Image 1 (cartoon, rainbow, N blue to C red):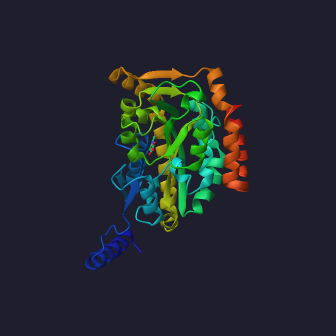
Image 2 (spheres, helix red, strand yellow; image 1 turned 60 degrees about the vertical axis):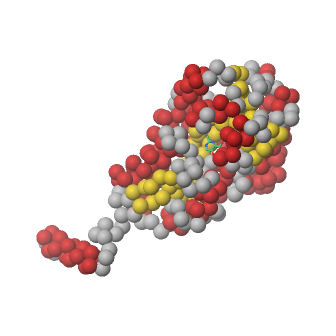
Image 3 (cartoon, rainbow, N blue to C red; image 1 turned 90 degrees about the horizontal axis):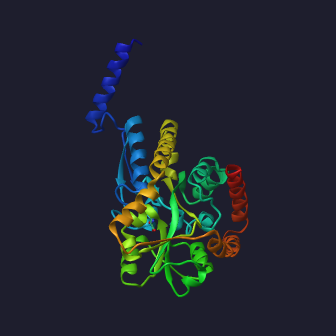
Amino acid sequence: MSIYSHLKQLTAVSCVAAALGFSALASADTWRYAHEEYEGDVQDVYAHKFKEYIEDNSEHSLQIYRFGELGESDDIMEQTQAGILQFVNQSPGFTGSLIPEAQIFFIPYLMPTNMETVIEFFRQSKAVNEDFPKLYEEQGLELLKMYPEGEMVMTADEPVTEPADLKGKKIRVMTNPLLSSTYEAFGATPTPLPWGEVYGALQTNMLQGQENPIFWIESGGLYEVSPNLIFTHHGWFTTASMANKDFFDGLSKDDQAMIRDAADYAFNETVKHIRGLAEKSLEKIQASSDDVTVTRLTDEQIAKFKARAPQVEETFYEMTGESGKALLNQFKKDLEAVTN
Ligand code: 6CS
């Protein structure tokens, strides 16, 4: 058949499609993607880079919903599992209640402190890139990427230098049991809460502290109500982007590959964004408040917190059994591979 007659046939098909009320671009879908943060925050940067790639490389488009537009983190996860959303970015801090092994990121002092090492770990880790996808799959989710947002920094109503200083302080944690164990081990009274309730609870002194990466302490204005920043170096805020698995499985192989490429692109762009972000955010915080104090724990002070880590690792084993043990072994091997 000549190209001309082929084109004519295609036009005829389009006319029939139009007559039946289908768009000639029937395969151009608008997908919905929700995340947990505000405009310009790390998850928002990732989401917009993901969108940019999809829209530049396919007929599809992406509608992004930020924190609060569709509810809390647990709400957007439920909507994704129900197929109302096609994509969601949810942090292990919340997913830990659904997938206990995701709590691995809350074993204190497991992750290195150097950002480049951490990034390399996320790129290369078998535990992250091969083992976790299987665990997410069991919950009807296609894991696309896990990525770091920034090092965790504690904030409190007064400076803290040792576990004894946390006695009697209610410290807000994300809603996973292992993070509560970490703060219990650190000597505090852990208080799990969804994000939306944190600022108000700190303001009214229902809480005396919390932990988050510096960019979030700045963008969420947490330093206004919890002005003493403590660099404990105990872990990284990690997050994850994923798709509803039935939706993903129903896509063409080309679209699936395009989405994986979009996730790679978004990861690389997000990594560029987080380099230097903590330093810039701290400068902004210090420029806007005279009440802020910064305590950087010495190695000796860190040792006192670190000494509490093994009991949290034990709790992780109790919560996850054989599966958690195998994952943690692999995780440690992967860490060794990038730190040596
Ligand atoms: O602390 C929280 O709940 C929030 N922190 C960050 C950095 N991102 C989203 C999350 O909900």
